[in-house]
Length: 374
Ligand code: MG
Image (cartoon, rainbow, N blue to C red):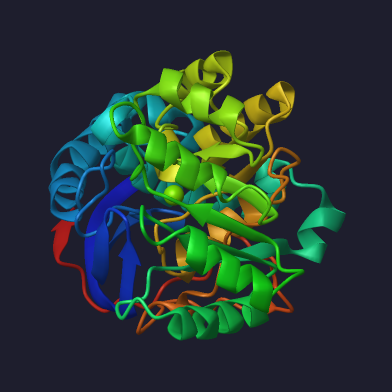
């Protein structure tokens, strides 16, 4: 496949309603798409970076610039070194390394993978090695419910009711002061619902921290699948202490920014459930490796998300069919949180089947590119 041109697109989407988290409120969702044009067809990759980033992920504008410079430069240099041939998707990650370049690598890898799959006539789930019967059944969909802007318990119950109708698991955002009572009210309203909470690193141990530890312990007994990222991502010792203290399993998200960090967390006993976000592992191929290591360590895992469009979510739906992903992933319909979606995302009865045609997902409807390299 000869690399002929590269294009960068931008969608400026908005959230249907602000999504409140302990780490801030999400209002807008700019999305970048990279298109790779070759002599045998095109490939598309979606960038996961959020407008303001997170405590451990770079913000959208920084990643956009990095894709337009480092991302395109290294891809074209790799092709030049191969006489103009596109490098295989499996070789894209090593062009970039990890850290802040991980979301750039993930975007480029998805586009190269998409081009390869379309050229070979193969769907992503097959390339990843997902069992055909698992792919046909579709992946279980989990939904997220943020902290309501009005902090109303009735508003929360209404949002959970809507989310529960579209998915098989609901994840509530919590923070100190918005935790014990909201969880109690939701659990009372939905006794059988598969429920987990996400604290986005908002609790503290240490001086005055006894109170935070007891607040977290007060969530034991609510039948939660897990408490996600209760403490600061880097403090694996404290996370291990909390994991030992709580009956509810501790899930790590922001702590899992690379395979090395994930192995450290396992070694500390800090990670009882893993939220694997492909963009942090350099793409779906890195995430496949991560779920394999979770399976080997006996740690349940799920595919995490950054409020992607249906394009990346279909890639994640394929990934979620791998055996290490034992819990429902962040695979809810983007129509539930974004004002528009450039691809169709057909959730049925709380499950999403991966795209079953050549490529990662259908070609997204994007308009004209912002930048082009011929
Ligand atoms: Mg999280």
